[in-house]
Structures are given as C-alpha cells and as structure tokens.
Amino acid sequence: MGGGRLAEKRVLVTGAASGLGRRIAERFVEAGARVLLTDIDGAAVAAVAQTLDQPAAPLDVTSASDWVAALEAARAAFGGLEVLVNNAGIGPGGTVEETEIETWRRCHAVNLDGTFLGCKLALPLMRETVARDGTLGAILNLSSIAGVIAAANMAAYNSAKAAVRHLTKSVALHCARTGGRIRANSLHPAFIDTPILDNFALPGLDRAGVLAKLGRQIPLGTVGEPDDVAWAAVYLCSDEAKFVTGAELYIDGGISAQ
Image (cartoon, rainbow, N blue to C red; front, side):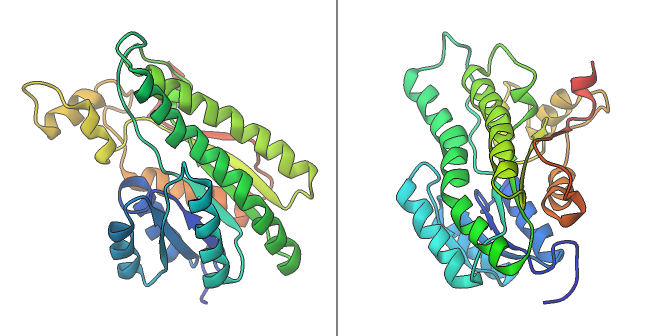
C-alpha cells in the first residue's frame, strides 16, 4: 500500500452505499485505507465498492448476525480491523405526539442499536488487530447536531442521536481502560446535502429551495457538503488524532454557537 493519512488502516464503514457513508469511504480510500463498504442495500453498496476496488458486504446494522458476518468478511479481506465508522442512520420527522411507536422504535434501532452492536461486536476484532500488529484503532460514530440541539418536530431522531453522543463517551472510556490503543469519538453534522434531506421536503419548494431555506438557519448561510464531514472523519480516524477520544466535533456552520 502507498502512503496517506490512513495508510494501511483496515476500515469498516456502515451505510456506505450513498450519502455521507459513501463519501467517507471514498476519502478513506484516497487516504490509503482499505475499506469494507457495508449497507443494508447489498447490491448498491457492491456497485459503489467496485468503483473503489474495495470489498463490500450486506449489513443490516440492527442484526447481530449480520454484524458477525460483516466482521468475518473484514477479517477475511484484511486480516483484521482497526477502524469502525458507524454511519448508517435514518432521520424520520415528527413531534412527540405525531410519532408512531413503530417509527420511534425503528429510528432507535437503526441509529442507536446499530451503533451499539457495531461497537460491541467489532471491539474484540479491533483489539486483537491492534495488539497483534502494534497499530492504533478508532471508532467514529455519526451522531448529529440534532443530538445536541433539539427540534420540536424531530422527537425520535433527537433522542436517538443524543444517545449516540453519550454512548460514544462511554465506549471511549471503556477502550481507554482496556489498553488505550482504540479511541472513540462522535461527529455532529447539521444539515448536509445528502439524501437524508429528502425528509425535509416542503410544499411549493424544489430541492434547491429546500436547501436554501435550511441554509438560512445556519450562521454561515448554507447547508454543508459531504466532504465537510468526510475530511473530519479522516482526521479523527487517523493517528493524527491519537490523543483525541471521547470528543464530539460539531460540523454545523455555527448553529450550536448561538
């Protein structure tokens, strides 16, 4: 393998068929990593992986058995795993009164349970890898600025992403106390121009109009781009961030500063 900020890192990214997961995988490969791209849409993620000359595996993050199979795929492809990016997520809207219990449970299952299962089940392989090869590991969990700043019409999403934020800190402390060679951090984007913003469709506005309206809520005056998140992910998963753990990085155009 050649050089790069993530040279030789062995990585698993969830939700990698589109949006932030895809862009993170692309930037990681450019930075020298070997990446197993996973997604619940196995055909779509396989097509993306082929463009990057990387392996792919189907993965429903709410399924423990799917996680076990994906981690075995990482072992088979790379001989180990050093970096886990828990990106897969859904963003249903709705106030607490509007949200059906099925929507609530599904939102938490994908965003929170999926992150929990990834951390829990990947850590043994990650610990084995870094101990054997003398490398450093990292877990990166995609939370959201919605996990810090609540909105009346995002009850389930606010709750799930806030839980991911705090779970990450617990994982970071656990990892620090069990050898310290694996870190855990969370990213907190505001509105980013990915398919998840399709949930914000507004009557009378096309997608450009929706993006402009959302951008007016941001001090910098615009929604973010996938690379704004992907480059942060490169940093936090690289050895450049070897003294950063239990941290949360806001990628929000200043909205949390208000």
